[in-house]
Picture 1 (cartoon, one colour):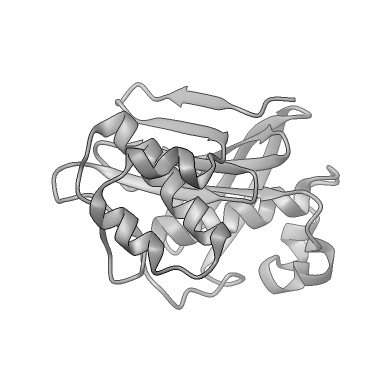
Picture 2 (cartoon, helix red, strand yellow):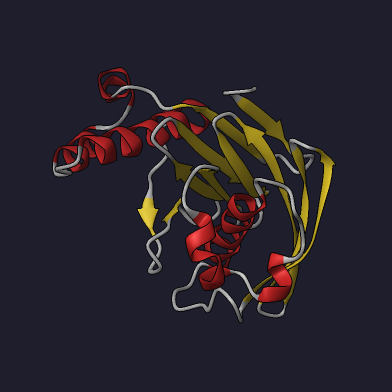
Amino acid sequence: MESRFTLHSPEGGWLRIEPLSLEHETLPLVSEEDRRRAAELTSPERRRETLAWRALLYRELGMIPITYAPCGAPELPQGEGFIGVSHSRTQVALCYSPQAPCAVDIEREDRHFERIKSRYLTSSEQQLSHHPAFLCIAWCAKECLYKLARRRELDLLRDLQLLKIQFTTPEQGAIECRLLDQYFTLNFRHIDPEWAVWKL
């Protein structure tokens, strides 16, 4: 299976998923402010994740300033485009769109989604697919929609809805979704050991 993935959109956006770099590898690649912020994090995993996606962003876009929206999502200066970030214990995912909000989420299939599926999927959504990774893909899709909304306090069952899922192969496909009164198509793919869902 793949452990590294790159995708470019016709509009100039891109998605990159890569193995999570070690902290000592990314420290020289980020800004002094990033190093200071990372040093304030008590968790080694959080430091590693934070430094990894920032190093990836700077590699692609240069040392561009990063701020945070009121919802807590990282963002670029106005007019510089939009980013979406996700990470796990082993991989980092970063997407960029020059014109519209974008989002990505990655998760391991072996998380205990079965125990919590009723919290994020309606009974009809649970019947959309019998693929063994569906609950993981559906979780990522809901997270992706939540990130696209760029606001808090959305109801995962009422405000974010999965309408149809289509596998083009056992390893990838697309999901038709509703976010409040907007409709989106999200793409997904297995990037071993995670599943990734994104909107560019």
